[in-house]
Image (cartoon, rainbow over all chains, first blue to last red; front, side, top):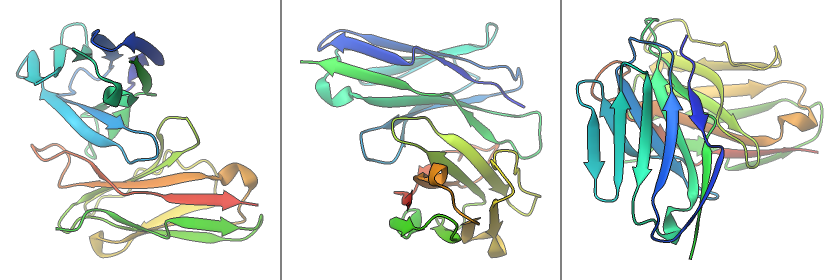
Amino acid sequence: GENVEQHPSTLSVQEGDSAVIKCTYSDSASNYFPWYKQELGKRPQLIIDIRSNVGEKKDQRIAVTLNKTAKHFSLHITETQPEDSAVYFCAAPDRGSTLGRLYFGRGTQLTVWP
Amino acid sequence: GAGVSQSPSNKVTEKGKDVELRCDPISGHTALYWYRQSLGQGLEFLIYFQGNSAPDKSGLPSDRFSAERTGGSVSTLTIQRTQQEDSAVYLCASSLAAGTTNEKLFFGSGTQLSVL
């Protein structure tokens, strides 16, 4: 199966600074890498995803980069705001099985201080 | 349209009782996941259904836990002889299909289970 490692587990930044969260995966056949954001007391929601045919994808202040050779991908948040405070989860699928189950990292608690 | 619906939203039970948690995925979604989330913790995988394939049950923590998905739609997670350590939020999620361009997971709002 897939093994997804996520770092750091907690991250504190000043409002306006950038935040970077990194994930590694083990299945070289994985080709889809989503990021989910879970605000306190709410359900996780997809914020951005990337497929293996591109190396970077941006959506306003958030971006995801992918290095297939090194098998790692990162979430970048620029000009952070207090409302970015949440737990962020990365994920990757197990393409080695017919089910294609999605594996999540353990999450990163991001706190943005005003 | 409606999102992923879970019921009940809250369940308080006594230790030793059985509980059933229900998940109604988005219509047409073939993939369905159950996760458990303790306070301040990550997403603990429990079970995964994909179409008509045999489910991936590798995350079920003990034989007290079981899940079914009838007709490829509604799923029920059953916990027998509940223990206090079973207290957590149980999240259900569904997606249109794995391995396609429609793998976005939609999560339900969860069932908060409290075992007294």
